[in-house]
Length: 181
Image (cartoon, rainbow, N blue to C red):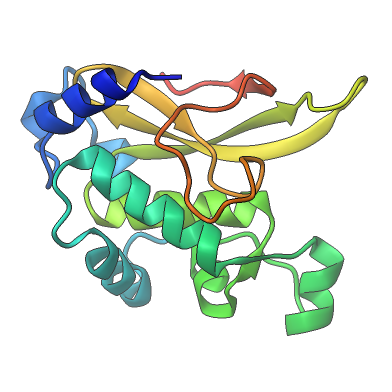
C-alpha cells in the first residue's frame, strides 16, 4: 500500500484535468472508446463531468469515480441480470443505465467514466486468491499516472465493505494475468 505521505505527493504533483504532455507515452489508446467502454455515450460523459468536476488532482478524480461506482451499482450475476432486465450485458452504457452488474461491468463503467474525464485507464483482471485453491475470476482497473506509471485499483466489492474505496492499490490477494504495457 502507498504511504499517506506518498499519496499526498502524488496528489500534489499530478494535475487534473490530465495533461497528455506529462506522460512519457502516447495515452490516446487509454482515453478513447472501445466496444464495452463507451466513452462517447452522452450519459457517461455527463456523469463523468458531474463526478470529476472540481477534482484537485488525477488521484482525486479516480477516487470520486470509484466511490460512485461502488456506492451506486448493485452487484448482479449474469442470471440475475437476465432475470431483472431480460438480457446479459457487460458494457459500461448498460451498467450505468440499469445500475447493476458484476465486477466486469463495474470495471468497464469505471474505465469509461475515467476516460471520459481524460484519465488514462484500462480494464484488467485475473483472479482473487482469497481462499485456499481459489480460482475465482475477477476484473478491476488500472490507471496511468505520469510519475509512477500504472496503478491497479479495485472497482467493485472485493475491498472492505465500507462504502468508500481506500486510495490504495489492490489487495495482495489479487493476481493479475495481464498487465497494461
